Length: 143
Image 1 (cartoon, one colour):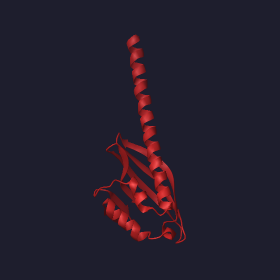
Image 2 (tube, rainbow, N blue to C red; image 1 turned 90 degrees about the vertical axis):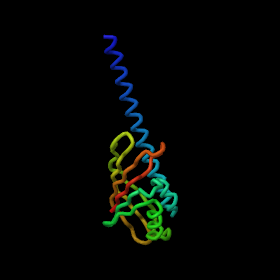
Image 3 (tube, rainbow, N blue to C red; image 1 turned 30 degrees about the vertical axis):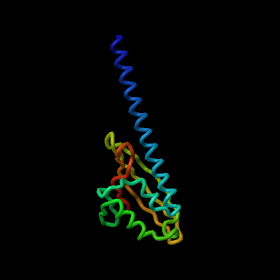
Image 4 (cartoon, one colour; image 1 turned 120 degrees about the vertical axis):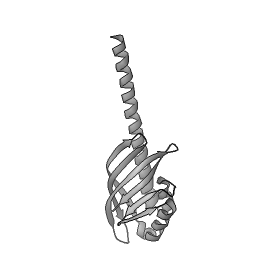
């Protein structure tokens, strides 16, 4: 009976630690996305890109086109959103954050741009991966 109690206590500890760790990861991901909203809304595209993996392997998919690389993605944002009137104010509505494995999550939701150049709304699915102890977006599909 004593061994069963020890086993149950150990199992509960592992479960609570796993739930705590997952909740902490989700909170961190939400914080990154909040920082992205703020940076975008301040027309700080470099700040917005801090949430992304600074690698040539970063993948961005939109409008039927795949873009590879952090710098290429930033350059495309600068070209497509050259002024504050184009970036406007960004808000995300997160529909789901799901753990893929211990080092990865996917996030699905909607984005809303309120701007002088005309409002724009759409959906996204992004993949976060823990790299060198930090959560970074490694893939983004927006439409």
